[in-house]
Length: 139
Image (cartoon, rainbow, N blue to C red; front, side):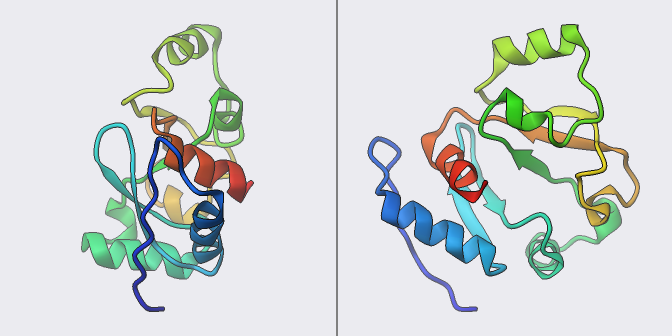
């Protein structure tokens, strides 16, 4: 797969370009996207070759891989979490969207490659429209 530059503006992202990026992800591509803190490297978490590309880019092995998932809202987070108690949910509701990653017990929906040594998952809801749209269109 070759590199492609697609410029999206948070204030008014063109949906055709958002859908183009989603299609790249569906085909196993790796993308760099903005968040509310830094740029992230993203892929389809269920695509082993895409995960392998990220490990190659980060120069790490699966046992050392620390990835966080981008979710579009709190309800989406529940797909990847085993359970969420009320105090944690209230804290997350106050803090998200925002520049925080919550490390929580992972559900069986999290791919095994990402649970090699851990039974937790990092989850974020960034305060940036671009990754939110990418995830919403993905689902």
